Image (cartoon, rainbow, N blue to C red):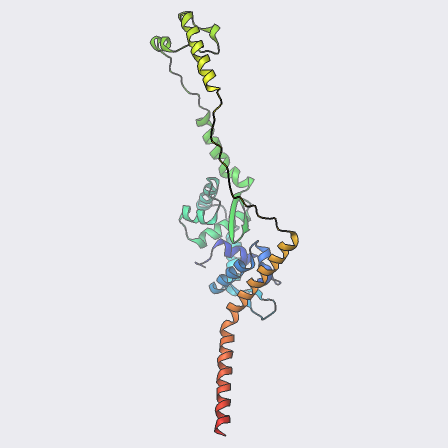
Length: 279
């Protein structure tokens, strides 16, 4: 139970009577090789069992430990929201949407985090997606209203607070140049000749700024664009990838038995040769 993580719990909940290693990748949006590694890890933990068969379907079944974990998760999923659940919701509202970031931010045991995440998902506070052996979380409307709405309301008064403007002194007002956009609205204490001089200076600066800037153009050389693969080529690549993935899985699973058979065969041939030579 202490070695359980949320992805293990997701996989355990999706094991049924027709589950197999070959078909399980499509259920959790993960490649065959990654799925085989995940199922092998969960088998080592003792939560599932895999019935291997050469050239056939490798069936996946739950063990007693796996069934007990599902029962505990179902019972804990009906409990009311507690402090840890609120901490998880606040972490998700703060932007921690990956399982790894949640674990490092809360600094809690993976098994406890998994049970509470399952409870929040069962009660409709969060939702999750699995892709390429990675779990991503997001708040639902119910989860956002429980924590997110409060966070927004607390930030609004601070963001919309009017800024106090310090009145400028008479000395600072006299030093400020009049705006060129509204020359007619210049205050009466400003000399009109100064206004005209300032407008001329700004006109000259405006002409200088409008001059075209000659910037060196960067040229890219030797760009090679890859040809788009056709649908037939994509299917061929997918078939090859699945073939090599299955081949690697079966070699890793049955290599010890093949070596043992070769050793026994070699001993048998050696014994047969010795018996023939003695005769």
